[in-house]
Length: 363
Image (tube, rainbow, N blue to C red; front, side, top):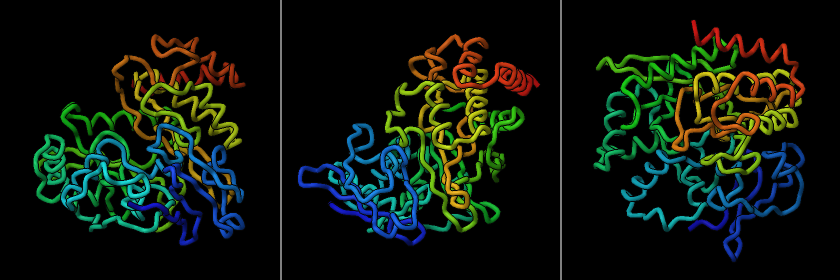
């Protein structure tokens, strides 16, 4: 049970996370990082020598920026099975233990020491074999090689099974299907991400790969990597420390966040464009963790990350997770134009974005 863990970035100590005697999570930047680094969350962890205490109830007791490093439901299941293979019960580990199991293998820039992560060959991955093992895992069956499955996907976010791989020498995420997905989920995601690009949305490089069994797999290039360089990323959920599993944001707030953080007109229009596209394709799964920002170390500023997880999807409550000017369903063009006007986006520009998105989807 780890009580203290160091946060590392580019081999420099960012700071230390520790559990207090009453099991509160505290964080303090290192002197070196204060001199040469940047705020890893400008809203919750400004760059100063003060001792910060986590207060959000949504991130296993952690600060949101560190919780972003942890896996979500599928990765959580992988971790539970991996620990079981080592005779460890997941209920017996602390939130700092969880970060140690991520270690140096997580998304983004941040690494954690002690490092209990495991690694494997990420190239020449047999997609069909991984899909079979994912199916077995989700069906509560024994998995032949839980070590490899965990090492490939143990730090990944989201509900769908996925692995962090090397493809043609580059870092990609490959997504696998779950029992709840349509059989052509890979083709669907490739289609809608392609339409998003056609609508003018900034998306990473994507691929639709056919395996030896003629199955299709969707690959998306990682924007938290630039060659060997790791890039800091933080979700909107972590920035504001809100619950991404439930409706917690409105696009008015998301655009305001983008304006304050990036001060970039292009990023503001990009968020608006994604709102419009999500409405038009009925992507209700537009939660606060599906919008992220990356730190541009050259210009020392945050920018909106490329888009991801833009596919039609329903929520169990039948409404958008991020509301549109206070509405979660039955969204009209007028509603979307109101969002534009509220955020000082010219109505003619808004109408042009709506029209381009409609044409991209229609054609």
